[in-house]
Image (cartoon, rainbow, N blue to C red):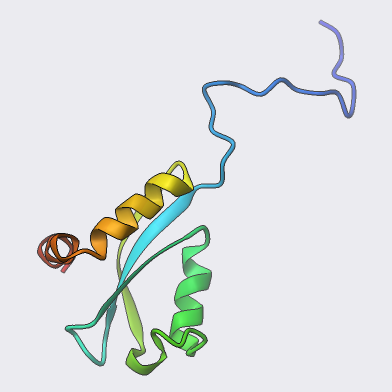
Length: 100
């Protein structure tokens, strides 16, 4: 077998996604138990830290936040569709039933 040449091009595998994984996560406020927040992100721990530090105007007033669910997706488009569903009235009911 020939030795690998540094810097040689490697053909992409068609069965492997090269997109960044995306996560949809659900937070519940510890100060207002009826308040939840749904968002998609690539780095969930960093986003939760930002929410709890008060860096997001949408969540600062209801901190601290507790993570109650994380769902991983292979691409951003699918994650965004699921996030949009969870923000709908049916999705909020789904979240309340399955993630509390």
